[in-house]
Image (cartoon, rainbow over all chains, first blue to last red; front, side):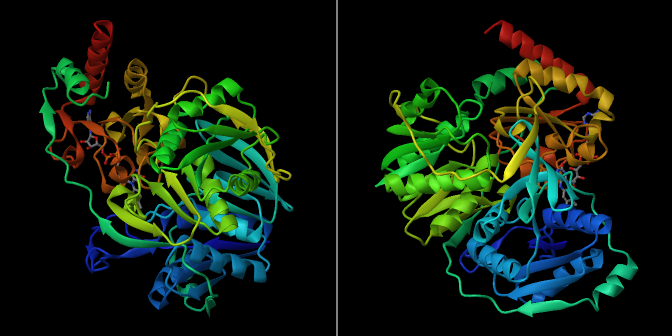
Length: 246
Length: 312
Ligand SMILES: Cc1cc2nc3c(=O)[nH]c(=O)nc-3n(C[C@H](O)[C@H](O)[C@H](O)COP(=O)(O)OP(=O)(O)OC[C@H]3O[C@@H](n4cnc5c(N)ncnc54)[C@H](O)[C@@H]3O)c2cc1C
């Protein structure tokens, strides 16, 4: 089984969020980049477990520029066999998805896994877009996945519960909590990652369907009103009369 | 020109679908709703009350297979000549809208939180820590609206419901089983949420959280470590790596308010924090704070809610 895992970088979860160039660019000053947690903890680790159980290969792919190699090396240290970087600025989800779909099609991947969303743009778009471009079934928000031959059985989140479904591979799967547990790379993995192949591939021509004009920050929260812990009637009255939420 | 709105009518029509219709109406064009499945005409016709001129329903599609829904909606776009498609950014839309974007080559804005200003739409980015103003460059546009961003507005009356053949093709995804806990309010849709963290010390203490939630008609949620150690089910985990919610009221007991937790709840309209530590970061994000022991405060709050309900 040839598995392709889509990796996005995202700012460390404790990063200060600020913008530069007239609020048109994310301020990268002092920002530490990590692998988007959904991609790493759930998609990549489950892919490795599936490979360990059934054989095959796990390739990670990202659309990004040379500085992103550090993030990709971490995915290799966790256990991916090889990596592909499509050498382009990941401008919008459509652009990124078309690059990955093209590579996946040309190289015969049978399972494409993504995280549920990135924690910076929260778009939840890439998995669905890749599946349509490849004309494959898309299983979104999977919290469990097993494979038997070319049949995958998955548990997915639905409104107010879960569903168990079956799909014939090839398919595209987006991964949410429950798929796997985080793996910390060990020294051997980190050493091995240095010599694993990281192929830099030129992008294909794709137009941008959307563009970010600028960013704004939410208004500052007004001060917290402290309530006497003995007097919950007051809190209920405030929630009713002032906040109007009950 | 018209705007097509996808509504999920699998279990009746949820409030967020009416929000999407209201949003579409505010774009100023005729609004046509598209749905699939077996909901009664009388239920579907309520789309008219929020501004739809008619509802198209493809009754041949029985599941939420994204591939099928995408074909149906794309065919509806073609037959109605719509130039804009609006979704509510809930679970089904998250798998369908991106597919539709590729199929129609229509730019997709997901997570919209406001009516467009000119040609840009405001979206939540960085897990609610900032907003982005996004422009769609293509002629056809798709906007997926974050639930609970605008209030549904009932302005009209029931509309007509028309059968529609969307040429869905076959379903490639086979549904084996659906598991839905009875009587629970689904977290992503809940308007009121009661949540608790490690401060509760053990799963055996969640009774008081459930009691308060029941009294309020609220859903329950929890912090990540609580789900990780198995005190509560995974689907209750809110935050940057769990569910992101935007209820009207979020009550957090025994949760410190780490930045990753806040990322999933900062869209809440009103936040109440109960914590024994005056330095807990959550107080900075709260509207109302109670410095006290959850084990005493929560049952007291439940009693106060009971009293309030009895007198109203
Ligand atoms: C990459 C990454 C992603 C993460 N994603 C998430 C996420 O999505 N969601 C999430 O929640 N966390 C997430 N975390 C974890 C987060 O950083 C915190 O560790 C976590 O939110 C803390 O949970 P807690 O508040 O329940 O526990 P603690 O931090 O242990 O806080 C317990 C709180 O309870 C209070 N308390 C104790 N006893 C009482 C009492 N009797 N009455 C009232 N209050 C009491 C304490 O004062 C304290 O404030 C993530 C972390 C990382 C690194």
